[in-house]
Image (cartoon, rainbow, N blue to C red; front, side, top):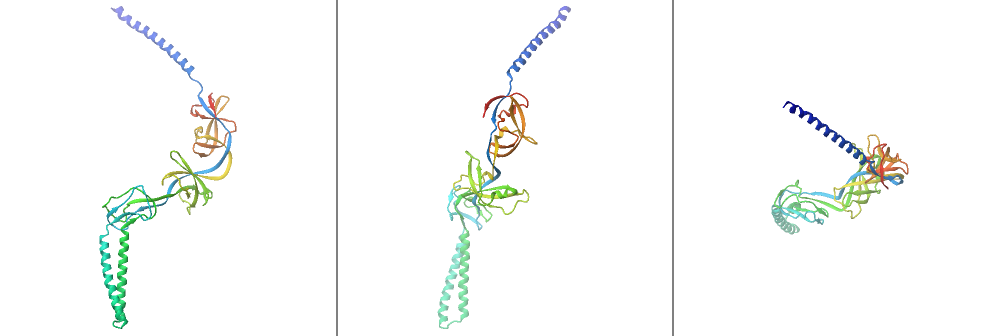
Length: 351
């Protein structure tokens, strides 16, 4: 019994040694296979060639309607009629809403009745005055009563006109903010109205670029969408003063007729400086941004080389390189993140 008990650990140790040896051989084999599978990263390169690039300044802006207004009633009361065709175009003068005017109409009838009696009195006194049957003072008093009643009638008529809410210009109505029968005040917004036949773009420029966007200058406006649209807009005017906080100048440009955009849409505005230079233009994904300088990856003698560059204007997915590249340099445009400085790379495609 003692012999059998002491033999079990020896057998176990022998089995573990065999398993460890097998695992060791398997790991070595796997390591050799892994080394065989790895190789230089595959990259696509672009041969740097200078092209003519127009220098420009890009700014952010927004599309605005030529005219925009919030429709408020001028008097307080209950809505008796509401005709807000949401999202529809309406003509100037179209009735949008009516406020209860029963009390004003009754007041106008009363004033007209008083005016009628006063006018009859003036007619009789005028006949008597011609035969000296009444003195001039009585006649003048009757005439003043007629004029006073006429003024009261005109005042009531003006109040009646204020109970009708009309479109001040032709445009597109927004969403309805109230319901028929609601009690409204001059602070209540019934709907919005904007004239979208003529669209403008408001954008800001640093004050030192203000001279580039004088009235009459043409700027390029890009509107995001599917597909993106680009228009040439004419500068209308500049704000009379520079913003003291941001030191930016607000500029307004007019989009061409037929421009497809919604007021409030984001716009990218490009203002040309008028200078054209020879630059190397690269895709933006070829640039490695850095704290002190941007970098690109070049392929020289089959190896990756990091090079500092100075970048300039950005246009969509392209960027101009001002310094750091020479004509004929092979710049990595795909696979940039896999290339390591000083390590071999495999070029798949040359553009």
